[in-house]
Image (cartoon, rainbow, N blue to C red; front, side, top):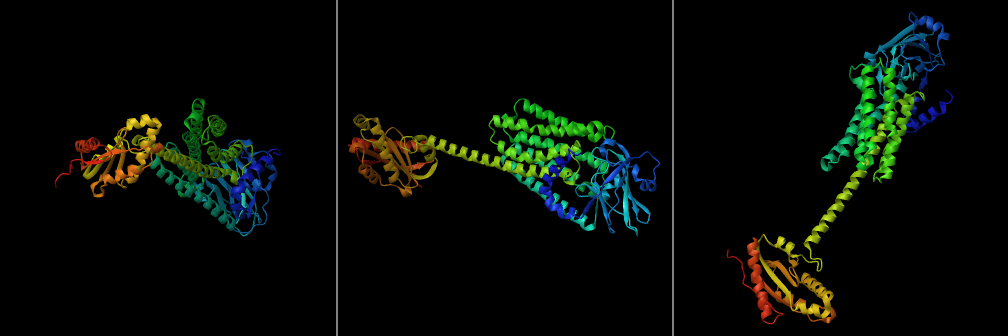
Length: 556
């Protein structure tokens, strides 16, 4: 006992840092009760037991007695007023009867069965009973507990509290559960909406986890027992199942959240085995208890321990395989695993019971849901960045596919894709550099490429904003402009003449132009043929000039 005390204190302190700040005012007015145990051999009478407290064992751990029926006697009570409440943790038991000894020697009793526990159930799965009214003050309490499963204890956490303390405790627990429920609903709606848009596998897995956590919180908080007529032992069966589902859903979410390479191989098989073992063990406990609880309860607790053991190989594999989400996973699971470890230690009776250890699952679930939501947000942020990068690459690829790499103008295919299909009249200007072969021979191909770039810049500057400018051949360029904003082809030629060429070389160009509509490819061919004939006429007339071809504008 002495060796376990520091561990228990450390665990309780960890939980109280988060939750005890809110509950401290309420707990301050509660008086813990020490109890001693006597196995029920049958035929015992409360008055005789009150009169002979030496028969009770005050040193042996309660869980050492196993299942059965028991009497538990409190220490002499401090001076208390009327209206005091007796509070204790909800446990698996068929019937509880509370006998109260008063200062005048009178004995009164109250109690409940497993079927009627809901009338006394408070938030946090705390059973609360009012002491029977009597003129004298109560001096000692005696519990008779029948059908105790005694896995966590026969009577756990008994306290005395007045109305103000119990009301404050209920408000604190209501606030905690309401905050948790509201957070779960908000996260659920948010991630379902995101899933409708993104369709990522980790999103439904996360929603499944949150749903299981919400269902478990509803059952374990005592609300299910308060709002329905469910037998309290059956409610605890359901608690085991829902908690196992929550843990299994958390593992499924982790597998969907982390990259597939993290769980490839033996770790995927191991995680499947852990999930299966946990679900089967807890289902066996729920179905076979209380008869086989000595076997099924340790097995189900071992299942949760196996879930915790998954953390180390997951972190190791994520680090070795350079997961992008390692730090997010470690942050999201670190605190919940620590709290779950405390709960497992309590389940194995390594550390003693405490209210906040018993309700640490709520805190662990809150941290898991909230911190995992940060991980989901981070994952969605990465997806957004990946999508933006993919779009940029797609746009760049389209631009490269549509652009002449030398001049930056549209290439022939992109020009035709944009040109064909226009019903309104347009002006087509074809520009061909004169004697370009001799230019390449004079200043080299690099110089010729620079001439092409200079021509391209000049044409882009001369064209209207709504014009299409393209390099449609080796030294041939085209400008397509709506007839309403038609260009002066001679002004375009003057612009080319004014450009300074490499090595101050004199470069001239011939231009052919015509006007027409381009609703179909055949119209484009006819229009191009007309402008090309005008271009050849300009070259035949001596080059460095403009010729106008036959207009192909249809009469209205």
